[in-house]
Each structure stands twice: as structure tokens, then as C-alpha cells.
Length: 165
Image (cartoon, rainbow, N blue to C red; front, side, top):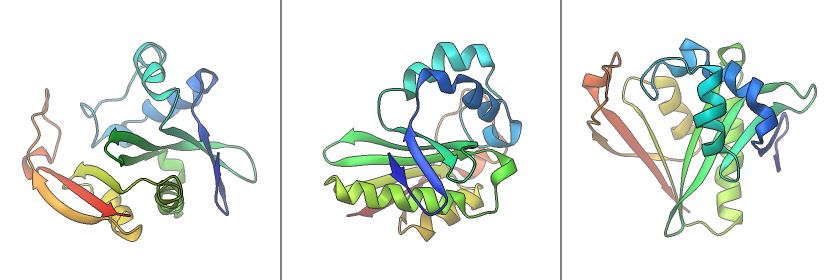
């Protein structure tokens, strides 16, 4: 578990299914990820939860109310490197939670001896890119990913950010 001034981050567990379905069922959350479409509750149970339980994914809850606001990722990819990511429900955008949670996980990465944090976003996702820069990651490269289905803005590519710890 990781705590900040306003958030509690703890591992995602199967009982989080309703909260995760609420998050991934929101079109604005999914706009720049996966295939750009909301995920059904069925797929959350069958596909998403098995992937995100058991390490690297953190449910984000408000410290004062316990309300679920989204999730953060700090998943090991090997060689002392972990991938940072986040998805917050739009009801909680613009309040600094993404920066607060991401910053806490960068510090956690340092504390557990990781040597590098990487993150990826679509080039057009200015909000996520701004968060990555605020927590110290820097643009490494722009690349073009093959998407199974077109997502608006995909023609501008994706970006990789990184921070050596």
C-alpha cells in the first residue's frame, strides 16, 4: 500500500470488479487507450481483472471517503525497469490526483530499487503527457504503433517517456 496526502493506493483485487467496470466503461477514459472503446463488465471480469490482480496495479481511493477514483500501474518489465500508467475516472480529472499518484509511485520505484520508469501515451493525449513531465519523466521518442482499429489522433503516433532513478 502507498499513501499520499489525499490517496490510498493498494493492489487491485477481484472484489474491485464493479469499480473497474465503472472506470473502463467510461468512453472518455478509453479514448486514447486499447481500441478506444469502453470495456464491458463481462470483459472486465474475464479479461481485465486476471491481468491486473496480483501485482503492479494499484486501486486509487480517496483517503477521506474511500471512494474509488481509478487505478495506477507500476508494472515490472524486467531489468530493474517498470512501466508507469494510470486511468482516472473523468469525475476526478483536473484535481491533481494523477500527478499525486504517479509521483508517489515514482518514489516507490526508487524505494524498491528500480533503476528506470517508463511510460507511454498517444501523442495527442496532452493531459497524460503533462502529468508524466510533472513527475520527472522526459520524452524519449515518438513512434507509430499499429492499432487494430483506428483511434482518433493515432496518425500522430505514440510517445515514450522515461526517468532513470
